[in-house]
Amino acid sequence: MNTTPNTPLDPTTAQRIAIDQSVRLPILFFFASAIFWLIIGTLFGLISSIVMHSPEFHRTNIAWLDALLTFGRIRPAHVNAVAYGWASMAGIGVAIWLMARLCRVPLEGQRLIISAGILWNIGVTLGIIGILIGDGYAIEWLEFPTYATFTLFTAFAIIAIWAVRLFIRRDKNQHIYVSQWYLLAALFWFPWLYGTAQILLILTPVAGVTQGAVNWWYGHNALGLWFTPIGLAAAYYFIPKVIGRPVHSYYLSVVGFWTLAFFYSWNGMHHLIGGPYPVWLISVSTVASVMMVIPVVTVAINHHMTMRGHFHLLRYSPTLRFVVFGAMAYTLVSLQGSSMSIRSLNVITHFTHYTVGHAHLGLYAFYTMIMFGSIYYIVPRLLRWEWPSATLIRIHFWCTAIGISVMFLILSVGGLIQGLALNDPNISFMATVDLTIPFLWIRSLSGIMILIGHIAFAIQFVLMLLRFGKPKSGPTYFHPIPEPVTSTSQS
Image 1 (cartoon, rainbow, N blue to C red):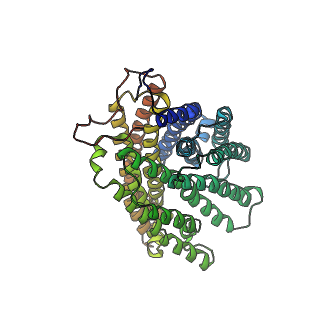
Image 2 (cartoon, rainbow, N blue to C red):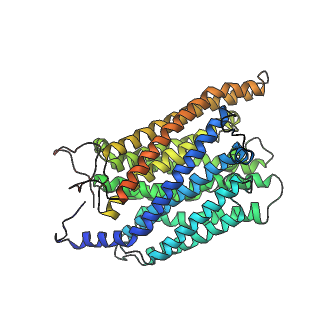
Image 3 (tube, rainbow, N blue to C red):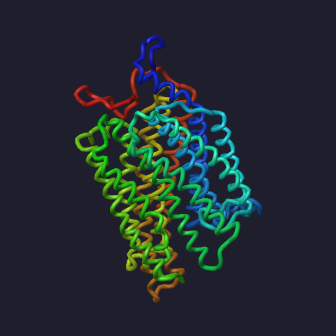
């Protein structure tokens, strides 16, 4: 990666370097901000997890601090810090880099993008403070007070307009890649979702139980139509790029994209089975959820067939290992989501920790792991410097991979036991709560593992910014690549 200054470059390489230099400062700013919010959000999540089984954990005998750390505030602070701080900012950084690379044009207006990033950080900071001081809304995923959401919306509008400008300025002689479809769709879907939910729930709120339907529609689709397209765009780019071969099937990509676009927006209502809602509303959502098997299976086949014959590279490439882990988790979480729309299972799992495990499998095991892999690929190209420590990358991967796997399994099993107990009239509610305590303890331990992984990642990122260590002649792998093994593509 570290080039000799006088080495002549071919036009393609020179163009890539020019593009990377044009996006360097904005993307590094977004990544640094995202990692900061990842650490903050993880600490909030760990505290809220411990409070679930040890309610006295956060007692300080300082009234204002005790109020600030109550579960009703610290848990939404965790969700929003992770969703709008970490996941959104990392996704925007990856989206801008992918769009510039695939459109083959440098980014213009870097200062404006950085200003939008600063504005986004101000919005998240105001929102988190608002939640902690009790100024937030009691609407899941939309707890930020109005003054924070307006700031976020303004920042996003600037970013989205500039990203679309990149696409308009693209090299018209080049093919439009599947990753670009997903990115453009995400940039259109997010303001539509966020704006509609804000209008119907906060600015001019609809009446009664309809609010619950809108809330589930937004919460479910924020994952499916904002984070998922960015995650899939990254997977479709990085898997073929690292192994050095094209996507298996263009036509499967088309099927996967359009069926996701058509079916996903109907999802969410199946979480309200048994609630005071029209049967048709629940049934349509259930059918759409089951039909989501089509885009999920097509994407899974496409990724698997692309990887076929190259799975041995997972031993070496950090990017490939994180991204493939995320892609496999996408298949699992999507099929699990479809199964949760089946009424006989839903009556057991809803209102339990099973749903919490499902959410973590989607936003973390799928999306966040792909973002980690993407950052490991992008940052060396922006800084012209290689990651200083393979050991820190290994700690990051194994702590997060094992941590989220344990968390998902324990919440799924604990949630099923909790749901069966809640449906048993012979078991009291408090007895049901007691049944869940061992599972909650294990969840906290898995959260500590994930926090260790995040700290290793943050240290590694800071060392990269400082260009720590000696120059390297090639990428940082988990293990040295032996000669007979096909080298990964690093252009």
